[in-house]
Image (cartoon, rainbow, N blue to C red; front, side):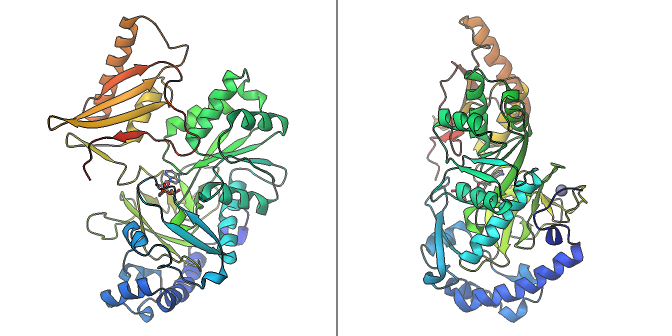
Length: 434
Ligand code: ADP
Ligand code: ZN
């Protein structure tokens, strides 16, 4: 049995959770219908009335919301409360286009902080810990979310924000940080920088890391765990649903528990919108059950995922989501073949390379070109052209086996690929297909 921030909820039975969800959804649909004209119009168009929603089973009758709706309704069109009742605004990172803004009442901030506090405790945190938050602070939700959660747990919190890696390392060592929170790509960079500064993984006091905001593979997890000497936990969320903490990993590390007292999750077929049975891969859709200011119902995340209700050894009954396999729009279609950056990362780390890589896709003479720049460590580096060519050929063959098509691999010198302090940019697609 694990540790919980809110044991009564985190260990509630499925029946108890369902009861909470059913009560909340009835109130929430009424709140949205009465206060959000944009969504009321969508419901009216579909012929759904608030009284049609009596339990979470009826959620599938409701219309979807997509990022396009959020952009159309920008900035205030989906607001569920008076602006004067809101205390904060955050915005998406804009990874896939125009940023959208989200609003929070104090109640919304509190429930978000609770979600992050659950994640910190599930990762072994307590008030004894020193939590170094190096997600970006500002409009991005990462810094504020983990900072708020850390305060709720009562940890000593270092609101570092991202960047200035030398200072991160200095404070980590001088102030004995025990839990690190940042993107996995930044964690890998910090690990690399610690080694370069002459530290062994056992020299720091870190015991755990809480990493999210971008896709990362199991291989990346092992890389970070060994370079920092910690256990690395995943955390998931998006600005539209509040921020990080919608789902978090427990010590079992077999998927992330969704905070189901606040968020109802569905998996749908991205083409047809049909709700898929448990275990199917599809697009993750969230309904916020009790957020006031930005109460999105059936929001399509575009993240591809699988849900499972399998019993977890940690004692939580919250449904678990797998690591998102990337956004439906992260998937590249290269010469007709579906390729995810995560597949490339898996091959590289399995073959003993670093997670420093970049994928470049272009179109020449009506054919897609597909190049991967792969950086070597100083140990791997060789000035013999034959050695480099051999590495390139081996990697091209391993990629072809994994992906079904062969990229052109370019081995690059150590430190030649820009490091990420926030979300890594893995793909440069110059094809201008949109
Ligand atoms: P943007 O959509 O502009 O990147 P956000 O900062 O709100 O803005 O990012 C949310 C998105 O980040 C999610 O929809 C998901 O694609 C990705 N994400 C967040 N956490 C994780 C995680 N643990 N694993 C994989 N992807 C994640
Ligand atoms: Zn668990």
